Length: 116
Image: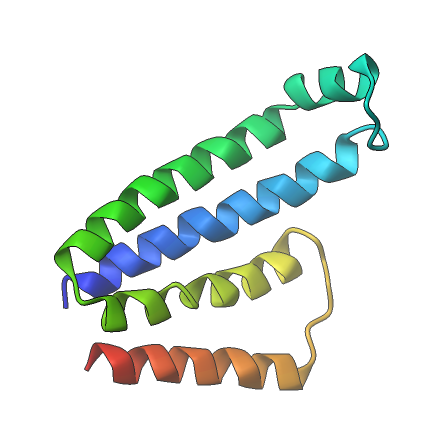
């Protein structure tokens, strides 16, 4: 049962990284091989926070796969889809259909059975 809180934290870090990546991309200049674009990347705090969250999630992932069976640990990453769906609603104000919520419930059920 130690895996579950670690997997939740790791999934929150991954989903948070995705949220800040999307926020960063919305504020960046159009992609180009010029100094203006790369300057907008380096000056974007959402992009930096995205990298920090991904980095922290990766370090936690190192710990998880070292100490837990891979067959249990890897499917738990799918919890990030659940948190991503919640972020889509709360941060990006997207409408989420009933079939998507059904998919999220199936993911959560799968994680429950894997952890048992």
